[in-house]
Image (cartoon, rainbow, N blue to C red; front, side):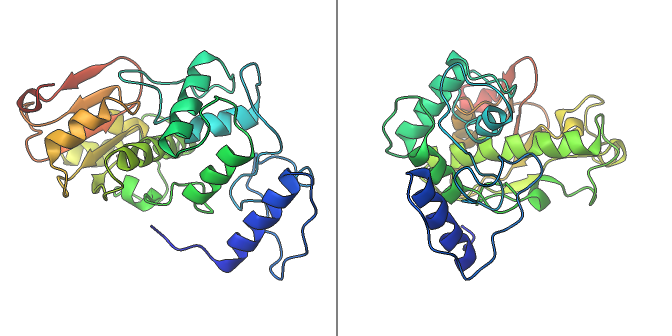
Length: 260
């Protein structure tokens, strides 16, 4: 887990105080500039350098704040499911929020408020990635996310969702590290490794996982609960030396040696 700068901690405390209607003393560190698309400053103050929620979200809410929440709870859709990142807080999003809350010992009411957002702030870095994963891990092909089947911005956004799914999976597996050997591929990178012509790596949806301390089968089995619609592992051709997980449309799970 990456360490937090002291400025972040002061900023988080300030945001938490304001979220409950209090006032916070000025920090010695100037507040960070909000990321594009973040909630307007001034409602509850800057609580996080990546994204700050300005109020409670619940079933029936909609908009960018909901979409940002959905990214963070994408790894809690329930076994075999995947939630839409569409900015609409419906029953599936509520259930995902409840599972996230339960996973971290919060009141599992499906309403995203101060406690839920505080936990998310603890779990994310200033670039919006979860604390245990990085963009560099999800792209060992190039530096700008170009050359895939979607725009660079879309590939990078898809990889962010993948990382939050992995973060949920990591927590469910006892917070033991998960080794990511690769993710996004351009067409040329994909061809160089003999990837399928329409591989989900080309869209930023996929990650290939090393055995680590869990083993390939444990990873494949756990992935079923965390929003991965494609799981390929031992027993599937070409996947005896890694576990492949991906989001995207449809579902294809095959790791025969693992009972999947």
